Length: 377
Image 1: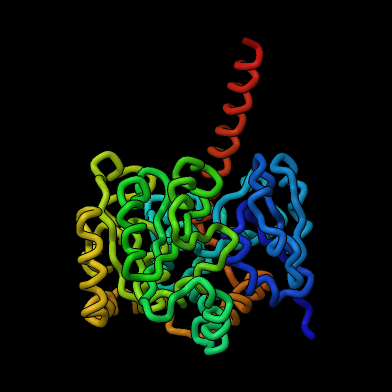
Image 2: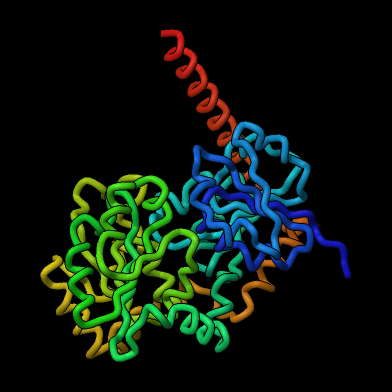
């Protein structure tokens, strides 16, 4: 066997681990590094922590710089603590979704030596900051396996009435979430459908009141440790708001209902702007639901004409996702190529990285100074 790079996959929540689990398993000796943040480690299930394929180690945020050089490549979704100090290990970033463009395509991408994207749309936007290659989503490879679908249905058979169709609710978190406004209408759907929900991982970690709203009804609720793709396999229809789960449902060719919330105070902020697909191309993505009282009729409409709404987003789908059923191999090969020196940041990308490192360093020093000043008072 050819020698392979030493790779550490860094993250701080279960969603990030599940996202890279398959890719990590293609590199013998790779490990998942949980960046310790507060007590979020408690949100990892025992099943995830005892994964047989990829060992896990928990690392204090303040000690993250000590990992520089321990691995040939660090793979992450978003910046980890003290990323600006890394010089020896290569940094690879792997796309985690298509929503929230102001963040997704931000200058922090300049820390990467390569970004692995789902398709050409993301690669074109990220390559301003760093080298980018469209490899697809390695997690999606399972979608093309009959065994995967069979196992998902067997695993959750006790939660479903086979005489009813199944609705899956996938809300985002924070100010763009539809939970507060629509949760009652979601519960009411259970009269005619199997209803399952999966809360956003940040809702599980950071939004206790919203988390309580989601788990208080007599429907089946899932959280950060549960596999989104398995749940989509069970669904006849997907309901979302401004979540990246819209695009997971799109890839899997599910009819989508989009819950509308007030964006007046959010547009142009850190999560959504006029360029964001979930806003700018919303009419193509699914059936827009203008209020909770219209949800039941909307699902009935999707039930009558599912292909109408699937075909509406097909042109965009082909732009967003690389046409492959073996993304795992493409992503694996891209990381090996990075290790061998195939990707080199351009002159402008290097200049931007230099400025970004200085900014992050100054920002951290300022935070430390403010904390000391606060303690002194």
